[in-house]
Image (cartoon, rainbow, N blue to C red; front, side, top):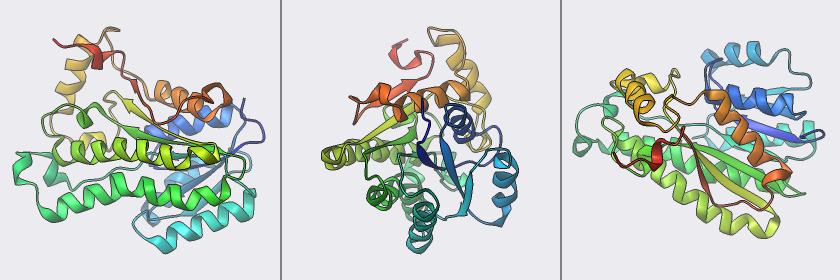
Length: 253
């Protein structure tokens, strides 16, 4: 499905991350992938995971540093020649901002969450566009906390709301170049980053009890949706937020 297609994935941290499940789906479909990591601590993890992916490229990139973003895309352009898709699976807020009351959010915590989790999508899209010479697909990862209040999600919910709004504005801007921009709103998954949210276990139990499918979504199911959005099968879809949450979002009670 994705033979002779080239993509870059931001956000692989370990084998349980949504970004890694997405990478597996894309690679198995024939895509050649570039991966980024932030800092030496994550470099070994990413290199270990991607070692058996033929033709993969691993480059450093802190999404808050313009020079690192530019260098990452320069490397991708040099190695691949073009880019067909980009996966944005990057989010961060200081742990203390993900507990207690939202009204107590600090200015620094707010700015950090919005820069890393939302503005980075625009920054990366800006850098990717010159390489998407034959059109392309940009996919980001969101969560229901962008739409409704989720206890302890706090400033991350605001950041995800900004991410979803950015998806629509970018889709409008980039559509004339046949570049599609969509987001996936995944149900809660017990990833390392998700554990920063207090009472994650209770959240998972609540979702499984109330979702129409009576279970929690798996990371690979999110990855399969990303594969669809990066493939020609979704050629008429842009500016959308697609829920992959076992139907939880449709329920009122």
